[in-house]
Amino acid sequence: GIQVEQSPPDLILQEGANSTLRCNFSDSVNNLQWFHQNPWGQLINLFYIPSGTKQNGRLSATTVATERYSLLYISSSQTTDSGVYFCAVPQISGTYKYIFGTGTRLKVLA
Amino acid sequence: GAVVSQHPSRVICKSGTSVKIECRSLDFQATTMFWYRQFPKQSLMLMATSNEGSKATYEQGVEKDKFLINHASLTLSTLTVTSAHPEDSSFYICSATAQETQYFGPGTRLLVL
Image 1: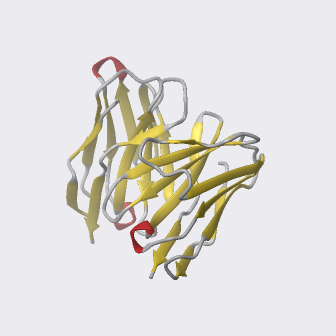
Image 2: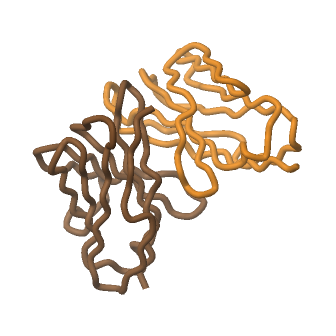
Image 3: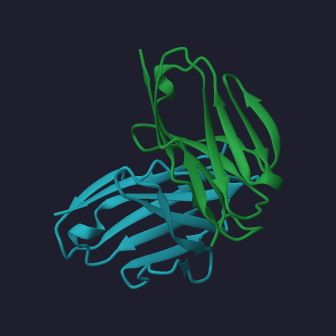
């Protein structure tokens, strides 16, 4: 089955710093989402981004489907950005049965 | 965005009892919902696909007799952990799809003593 790896596994930033999180997947996909899991466990949608680039405030994401990776950029990080970031792709193309990446645990220090 | 709710948010039960978790899509209909399980500091693992009006489909290694799923309406799916044991303690999360996007419930923390 498809494998999804994220890097780095852990990241500590000073408030105001920028960061790039990476998601590599082992097979072609037609769908990819980025999520933020807050300290209480709630998963929050960040981007639905099967290809191309999207921006939402301080966050932006780029997926290069042909090269099987996606990047999440966080600029001017804030303490509220802390948590775990997951990318997820369909286990089976054309479905919403998602397999989640290994996650990046981010801690932003004040 | 679409909203998915779960109830209860946390539950503590004795070993051997059964626990029911509800997942509701509040402002949209979902013919398909998904149930995930997450252990501390780990990623989410898909357990099963809940299909409205038909049987759930389970991922390899997930015991269907242990984790009973019922999708009785277009807005409600339930997961029942039967004869729970301490190893069933985990964070259970449901999701549903709206407009090509997966929306997740807030999760249910189950602790089996």
